[in-house]
Structure formats: structure tokens, C-alpha cells
Length: 358
Ligand SMILES: *Cc1c(COP(=O)(O)O)cnc(C)c1O
Image 1: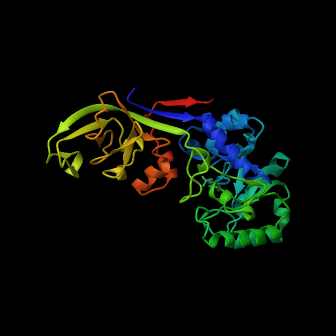
Image 2: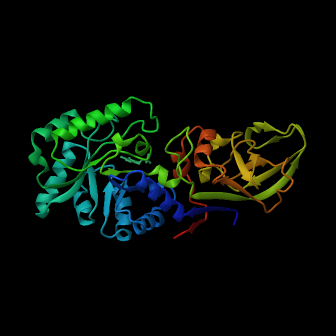
Image 3: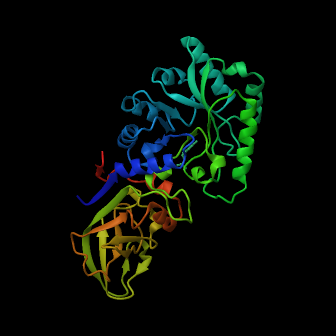
């Protein structure tokens, strides 16, 4: 084995419990879209079910359908809404669409009437994202004709925050006001507001159902402040080859790094095809024995090089830690110019995965 991704399900469960403790007035769902942000929904979701989680969300209906046999008896919501022509499929598999337009409300209501029973749904009100969710016109339609919801069991009315990770951003309060005004015009129902960061914006943003994803997987929901959650993954790669490079010699594609002194270069079999982003070229560090090791040259598709000149302990079979407690997804994201979400959802399919704490 030349690289390995270890995922500790106990840590994900502990992160979920920590979020529950922060949200005493309401339930806490688990967002497991995009294969639980790359960490494995088929492993993560059943672990959280065992922990007591009763609400799960995916983005696509196929993701939800795949989890249905693993999550008997609990809600699986589909955040991207009711997809055209798929109402029968949602109903047959007991998937709960997050209805985001009057058209989706109509289609789900029609399916309910066809089946002769009420069907569960969440209703998504847009308060500023302008992506999905009822716009002003659709809100008017439904507020003025609430019988459009007659055959729908409204599990919650929800909205989604645009900048929850920026506590000072006045848009957070504006969305809250818009949401309250919309709810006042709709039938009484539980409410769902916060994502991970929204859960740290104070009691106004608490609701009947919080919807954290990223924080479960170790992304800091409070950027710029110490993280309240723990990183549950560890990605390490074994040194594939060590070589001595004379001063003045370039390393890697386009020679964007040149040895300034006689240097020792370690090559690992991980590259951008594994989601170790090319934008990390000349910019990142790995960790060995508690010390940082600089990445030098371009990240290539299947290989990456590190300058280990100052680390005589690194030998041919040494392991470099690429992601873990010492090099967090957020840290790697800062070097790559992205966010921790993209680091996690980019984790490659070639890594052998090992789960702990199942
Ligand atoms: C992805 C998503 C979430 C979870 O967001 P995190 O920032 O990962 O906690 C919650 N709600 C909606 C609508 C989403 O799309």
C-alpha cells in the first residue's frame, strides 16, 4: 500500500453529539450529500443512525435511494428538490423532497392524490440565495392558496443561509427576517434554518431542525476562531522514491522549483487525479513526525514531490501525512485557494479506505 485514507466514525459521531448539545431546542440532522462530503455515506449514515440521528439529507434522489435500505424508518430529505418525472420514485422509496417551487408543490400534491394519501415534504423558502426555493411570486401563490399544500404533510419550512460563516455579515439577519415574514404567511409548521456555521450564529438561528454537514466531517464552522470540531480523517502516503538533486536542478513539470542547495527530494504516489489539488504546487506542506515538510514543484497527476533535505529521518518507507489533525482540510484549502468542503469532496477514489470506530 502506497497511500491510505483512514476515517474515524467515532469522531464523526462525537462531532454530531457536540452539535446536538449546541442545539438543545431542536433536532440535528446529518447532511450526507456527495457521499458524506467524500468520506463515505454508506459508513457515516448508519453510524449516525446508531448515535440517534433521525434526519438525513442528500442532494440527489439517487443518493437518497441508495441510503434508504441502510436507514430504515428515518427521514431522508432530498435538498435539490423534486426532480421532474421522479415523484413516483420518491414516493415508492419514501424519500422526502425539499420542495423549492410552486411547480414542485403541484407535482408532489398530484402524486399524493394519485396514491390517495398525504406525502411528506419540506418547503424551501428562498431568502437570498436565489438558487432554489420559493421566490416571491411562488410564495404569494402558495400563501394565497394554502389548499395547494392540502395533500402534503409539511415536515418543515426551511431556508438556507448565504454567508453563515461570516458572523458579522448583516445578510444573516436579513435572511432571518425574510424567513420569519414568509413563515407567518404559510401554514404553521416546524422550521429549519442553520447549516454548520449557522449553528454558531446565536440563538436566533436555532430552529426545530438544524442541517449541518461540513462540521460533522471536521471543517471548522467558525473560520478564524478555534475549531469546535475534530478532524475525523487521516490521509497519508508512503515515500515511493528518494533522490538527491544537485543545486541548480529543477524538480517537476515546468521546473517551477529549483534546488538552491544540494537537496533530497521525496516523491509520493498521490497527485491531482487523487484530489490532491494542482493549486497546491509549491504551496503546501505535509507532516512527518510532528514537523512540516514543504511540497516543492508542481503537483502532477499521479505524483507529488517534497523537499526532505532537513528531515534525515525520512527514509524509503516513511509515511508523510497529507491531511490529518496537523494538516487540516481547512489548512490545505487555504494553501490551495479553496475551502475545506472542496478538499473533502475531491478526495480521490484510488485511496484504499479504512474505517475505524464502526
Ligand atoms: C449542503 C447544505 C447544508 C449543509 O451545509 P454545511 O455548510 O455543510 O453544514 C444544509 N442545507 C442545505 C440546503 C445544503 O445545501
